[in-house]
Length: 87
View 1: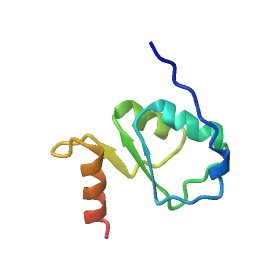
View 2: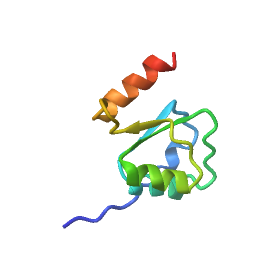
View 3: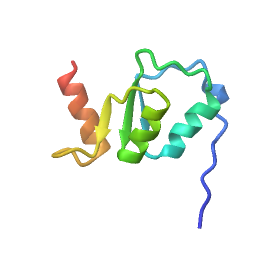
View 4: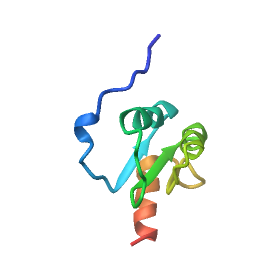
């Protein structure tokens, strides 16, 4: 048995990322808890699995990278495909 809890990431507030990758809906919840005023702007969002993508979309986030997809079973492959097609 395990329990997923949000880590305090407030010390990262001024850090900017090109891509945020989420593997579970709890990761999306952690983003919202730690950064309630988060604005996606140019940050790309990657989501692994339909429940993670749904959680992000319900919060108004734009999903730029999804995995798994046909022929792209892993997040690494999905990110690589995104980079190749969006030079």
